[in-house]
Image (cartoon, rainbow, N blue to C red; front, side, top):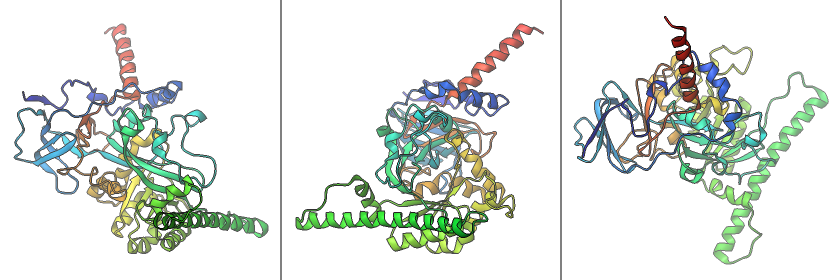
Length: 463
């Protein structure tokens, strides 16, 4: 039997649509309360069941991202994959039909770098799994530390974020990041791709302000020592890989297994990229030269000065994870809008980039507004949307699954009241691999709670 519903009707897994994006007067109160002790507990949302019947979204404006928006379109998906998109789609008799007149259908947003799932409260050390001790930790796998019960995950996905590249931090070689789905019982269920990249923190190449004599020499010594440590780690990993190849092909015994160097073999073979976190121009130049010598697939993370090296990055086809648009300029003499206009400058230079928040996990929900600010300062609107959908998917090699709405890709999408980059837009429904996601969160529940409180107070006060 065909099931027909209008978007916004009560669903089997009810979603309070009017509170899916609680950016109202009570937002500050809710955020303060959400950082209390209760945040260390588990979220109340139940992971969605796998899709067990076809679903058709009919009558809305479909935004594939890779092509022009489709007015009054239909998107049909089954078994977690998109089956058809168009204006004249035949809906199967056993499909559930959701009427979306006046609504918009977009691919789920992608956060290309985040700590979400790795930390709950920064002041509570036991809830912080972002970093491991030591400087060389290529064997650290971010996905295994993800907490599926995090209260921050429902908050982020209620604002349209469906996929996140979770990355470790700390040390010189921090470990490997992973692309995860924002729904699931376990980290195994949530993992879309792992490893997604190896993360490296490039040392500061500038001298401390007013450093002279011994202080300057010491700073240079620390810098050179750190670079040498990085080079030695890759030399040892390459030697380990070559020794292993000899053993496999010629039966010559080699040293015992070392998990650190095992984790780096896919990187050395070019199967997994490296994200080098470097903001200042000299850091970026040094990282590009080093990666070229080592024959590595490089992604620049942060990249505050990437616009200064646009020719270099464009020539070598090196993508950039733009480290937050909502920040201050890096130098006192730079114009106030330098961070805001960075994505637009990269776009005009032909550099592939994704926009990230580069902030703490509780603020990951603000990702679309970073893209919106970039759009207000020179980045074309359609490119701003791609910077949080298609481009991060392409950078990490998951664009065959997510990042756009195309036949054969995962049915990972959102249904909204308008442009998701606008604060006034509400995300009314979200599907991840065809599974209907519960969009309630701690913030929406607090909104409902205190709305009821003030409603009662008004009722008690009388006319």
